[in-house]
Length: 290
Image (tube, rainbow, N blue to C red; front, top):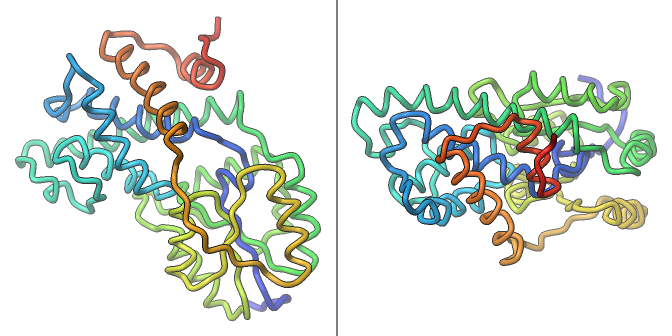
């Protein structure tokens, strides 16, 4: 690869480029529940008191925000099965019997189906690029090689990238995870850095993204709102910024996420099966679509 520019800026997709908000966290938790409920892992749930389950599950979400989808899933399932918020590479690590180890592939398939369905509905109905992001991309592309590094599966990432009409000509690479969801953003960032850049900045929105940047040895900048892009463009005049402040979900944020997921869990356990469009409309507006 021939580098035309000395430095690179790498964007995470969900959050910095397309604003997905809290609903992505709700999708992860609710889809994990559905995958367990619809497979042999239902035995670990508490139908008469689902608050027990959401209180466990939330720890997996908090520890693995922005991670590849199957890593997030395994962390949440680990919380349900053994109350430990640690992702696993093999279901045998969960301490379940051989029958459930074989069932884990079915659980992953159900999660992937349901999670993708919710994301696709939200992308169509609610998710939009932050207003100034395309102008920012155009300006930054004049001085930096631009990339996308995401935990989203490559095929889905490229489809979503085109769905929102981002200009591929302004990017040197669009890189996501493999179909098994095993390639994380730290690995992608290392690959980009190894192209020979003097400096690399990763723009993300989660504390996990900061960890990925540290692991890869690159700079980091957090984007949560439109105002953060104005702040970035002001700071970058003096060189690539590097923010190292750690943050977590607030108590209020977690309370909202937990209450919404618990409502959906109870509805699903009672036999209600709204469409993906109806679910994402309720998550984002508090009412079901007609």
